[in-house]
Image (cartoon, rainbow, N blue to C red; front, side, top):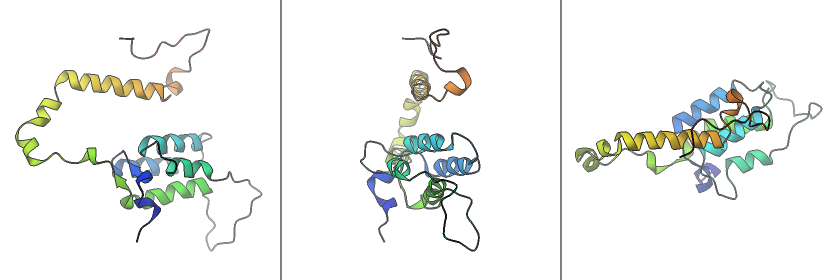
Length: 162
């Protein structure tokens, strides 16, 4: 049976286990004031972007619930909002989501010929780490700890320009 989770715009960039772990952690902190923004960041980073649909756009289309909205009575009332239920459903159906092929185990010939050792050279690793930190900085992950850039107190970033 084909579901929306099989579609290309629902392809994970992250390993499936990491997505489930982060989704679970976020659902356990659903009382945070910026929960929706954190969830949007998770969906933006964990899934393939550039598609017209996908989890992020579907999440953003869910209407914000108001306290006066009534939900049909259930045997056990749900304490989750529509957006939180959406993330829970994604997490529970993670085994149906496509994973990025770049996380596959290298072929036997690649392992045998030492391709992994070549990829792990110090310069390559350092360059990759610097690029990762710069990307996280551009996306605003460090603003909470280091503050936002301000005219009175310039923040020049974590990494000096090259």
